[in-house]
Length: 163
Image (cartoon, rainbow, N blue to C red; front, side, top):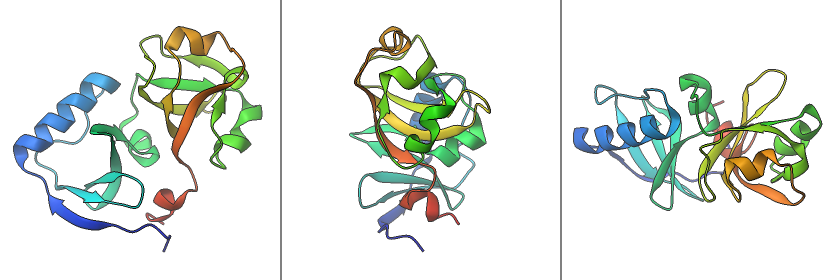
């Protein structure tokens, strides 16, 4: 088991589940969990997490919900993506922040401060979740410097709790 501490786990009310699900659907362009599924909110070491049927598929950072890497893989969102070249993949899966020159494509609707998911150009599979330091157009411009601050990635302690 990984070294992440989960505490204060409690079942969410139907009304709360609907609100979070609706917010995620608007942000990501696909339906996510429904009020029929068992959704729990819990505190973890770094941020709050959402358990959907006993799998950690969401996280809440500064009051804003988003999917984890596993959640992105399950629901396959159509928005809020950033595509990186294959040369950047080893760095991203080791928890590095995403730098501007490694980006090949991005969703135009991204605003500075939005949570985004990072995918590779070859397989289009989710690799990480982060907070964008730039808008979608600025991400596509490939300006040098840190473009996305990494929050969660394949192989981190949150990922390993599901193994």
